[in-house]
Image 1 (cartoon, rainbow, N blue to C red):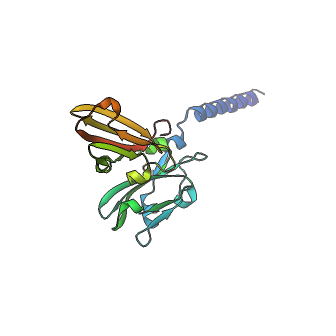
Image 2 (image 1 turned 90 degrees about the vertical axis):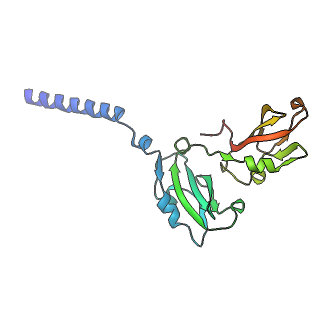
Image 3 (image 1 turned 135 degrees about the horizontal axis):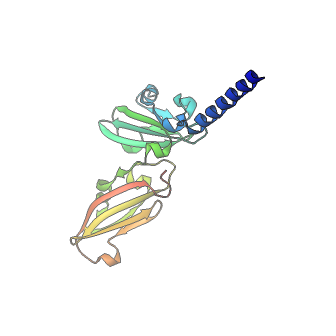
Length: 206
């Protein structure tokens, strides 16, 4: 009887320890929230083109089971660097019309949770500068106008830092809206675009 009770005590103790370890053990999923799939994506480049619909089967990995993921691809076309992201289940075709002509080369591809991959910000300063006419700017906050899409499937925001007669200003426009500079409050004077970025809106960047 004593041996039986001792054995039961050991089993109960082992069960409690196992349960405690399971509750406190680090999450494998959290530790592998993203994976490097560069080699896999490179293999999919055929005749200087890449066409992919990212999902666990296509990429051969699922770093966060049951959670929608994002594919981030860094690549060059004719030596010019580009970055694009695609949500799980959304088609990605490279090069895009805005990339120009040249050899397509994938330099890095990451597959995982948006929070791990991070938000992509495109510097569109030169593109916005091209829109300045007669010391004023009216430009559409759109992928077409910016010639890129830094967050496929996400609502984006255009941010512009500029100066009028040396006085610094900044302006923003949501995707689909027009941005007009200088604003009435800026006054008249020499317009200089300092910096412009095109990126997912803060409330949607994950």
